[in-house]
Image 1: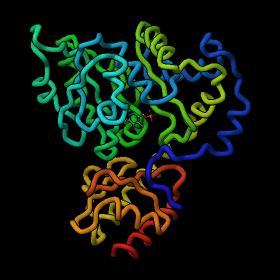
Image 2 (image 1 turned 90 degrees about the vertical axis):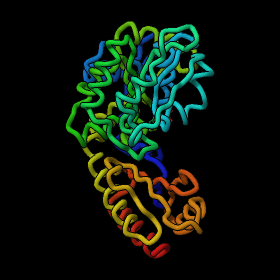
Image 3 (image 1 turned 180 degrees about the vertical axis):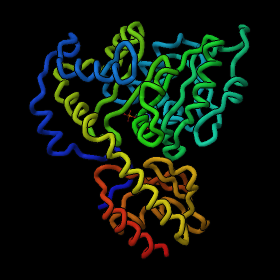
Image 4 (image 1 turned 135 degrees about the horizontal axis):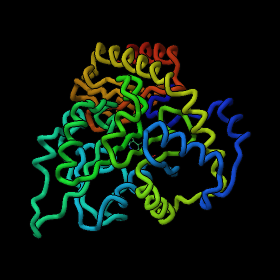
Length: 341
Ligand SMILES: *Cc1c(COP(=O)(O)O)cnc(C)c1O
């Protein structure tokens, strides 16, 4: 099987596991796990933030951040296709008592004009706009990169209106290797940033949020409330440290593989791909034909040893990652040609 469903399917490599085995550990709820502390300090330094907090998942990182920044009844501006609006089980309403205000951004990235129109008036009829949440890279839009100049404009405007900024940076690493903009340069525009180690970086689990000392102190409280206080979790943090040192630069290979596969899909008789959206490791392929729907095409791929994700009735998502090599991509292209022409 060539598994192109998601970059979350990667398995920890042998050297990563060996590194995990050697990790020093302690009780992290007491703040006594040295490996977790090293990871948190390393990320805080990388992002030029006061502090960072290890969390169990990207969802937990985003949701803890939303709760710190808001009061029940507040409103958060985000993109219509964002992870917090679509893929976090309605947690913003459930856990923070807030409402999301989704905007239809271009390639998943709302413009300052769209955002400023969504700002609520200071009037008791309305919820209070409190926070803007951006996603970089954008998952559902196909791994698209948020242009730094637009982030800067939005952040400048948000400051004038006293709004907080949160970055869902599950795949910020992918954006950074493409643009050469370092993580701190992106992070400076946000009050909080969440990052994932379990996507393209290949760790078995783990995410992190970074921000001011006060933000992290309060995030620690919500992490406990959400069941994310864990004990000798340094063995997992070690995998994340290993991933930081070994698996970031190689994301370029995933991006090259995605371009090669996307071009081949685009040339096939049944798929079309918006090549402008293929900026990192995600491909959204749309079916040209009406007679075959996406789940059927996904099943045909599966019958031929390729796994992909149906994204709608007409769209299929393919994601490249460290456990698919160039040969697997070339093999996939041959198979796709055989099946679909
Ligand atoms: C994967 C992902 C997350 C976090 O997902 P978890 O499965 O909770 O770790 C958050 N944001 C984006 C954009 C993602 O792709």
